[in-house]
Image (cartoon, rainbow, N blue to C red; front, side, top):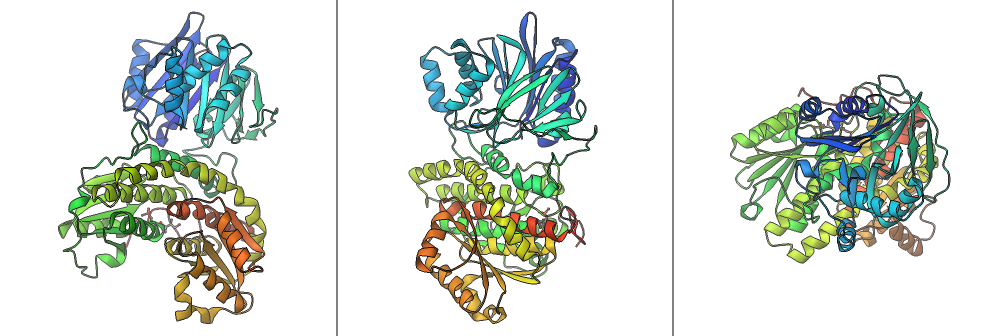
Length: 610
Ligand code: F6R
């Protein structure tokens, strides 16, 4: 993921910025750069590859100045080349570092070009630099210029901007991508996270979505999305917060849940070209395949179950989804399996590693869908698909599961197109639909308040059922897994239609049943299952899209008092959008019970034994 760093009022800004970039390395990147401002104007140094390349450039061509910005870039729009590395400079007077995707960049680029702007990169970020140049020319201060730019852009962003006309200021803003300010005596810093600022500041302000402002050496003037002056809490952090910090959240898991809009953005960006078209970094011919196997454990296995719905419906390609520890010992029939995909956050789960190895030995092509690029699975599989979730510290998988879902949906769309099930027009529609996901996830985050009283209720129960149908059935399984591993409450997930075949016997007065519902073709049957459970005394907790709730209440008025609504979305995106509230429900229930959320008992982040 891209990393941002900025400094004002430092004797050797370039050195401080380079150190900050080093602390951002863990996020992953493929180019980096630093720009500083001194009396003679802007100077920039950029390099592709490792930070050591940028360090060598800086050694031979040092930068002076007390104000500067730096960036590690993970290429999304525009290939990995020096011209696309940040900082990006417009007209030698505005320098920008940006994390995120400006969704309307094509239109803005056309308009700016028509007005005479000369673009030097393929990035979406460059429109920011030209928009700032234009806004500064219109008069007013840097804060006004920032507000004017924000009014024109759509998408997700965190950015820091230097302008020649305001040599002692930095403009900053965030929407869906994280950004933090570091305060120090006589100096001010900005960075993607507290980790980047850990060397230089022990007092951090984490910006909220929609915030923007102007930093000077000794002040941070901040505004909220409505342009009102904003006072944000200053959080004390330790000088050396270790590899990753909680950034003001109570637990890593809470932070990781909140990172998911950004994770979705980067996971998508990694598989999009400059036109927003999806592509895979693989030379895999899905058209010739008879079947694939998805291999995984725990949450990664459940992500595979969701992926099967997509691959079979969008690509008409049979998928065997296998619990890795079962697969290799049951002599599975392999003649119809052309590709085995190991799904794993860590890339180290021994069960999955061995299952993948087994499939390879039996003649299948092997792929690894992993979050750790240097992992064993990534090294051993023939093909690698990286998820862009960043370091996940919480033992219970949240953001890496989200990233797995995003990539599995991309895989299904690309396979469907290759196999002729999806035509060009439909593929384009799906690409556009996928681009809306980060925004939908951001909006779903608003469910937190509705969940609090439900978590208080659940924290007192001993047992709970989760129900879903279709692609929401595996999401119900994931909800139950999250609740049991975090709060130690017994929970089971069932397909709604299965209830009548046995589990309905469990329902008695007061049993909590978490029902997942979206306005899709399963709606009428799922609603019947909910009504059946309620009629037998279940306490229904409805987690559903807005229109599904309205429809359900129209048809079955007193269905429940406990409900959590998320924004309406294409049913293909419902597993992601509805996963946020189920993660929140488990998290909040566990915190109310006082369990060790980040390290639940008996669990390890990476399971390297069988
Ligand atoms: C549950 C969880 C685990 C992991 C499982 C596989 O929240 O995190 O079930 O999903 O141990 O781990 P990876 O994905 O690293 O192979």
